[in-house]
Image (cartoon, rainbow, N blue to C red; front, side, top):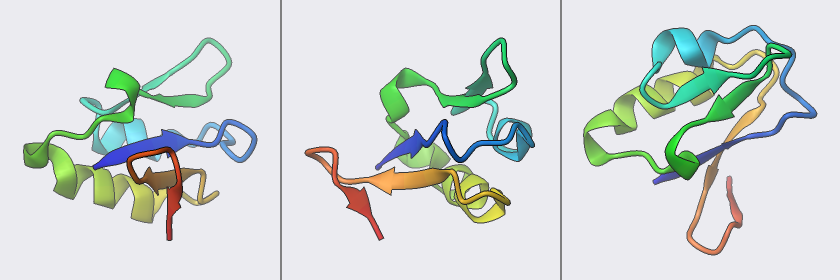
Length: 71
């Protein structure tokens, strides 16, 4: 599993960072970024899903191999 943060949608609520600090960080402007190239270890998949579900701007998306968005 991989995740990606759409910086154009992110408004800096940073719930993802609070819920899954192992997977997300914040840049100097308050925009969330995915750590480790967005790769999500199996042990952290539940946290990734929680972060995706709790993003008020729907700025986090699952990504399939090849870079396609997973709906």
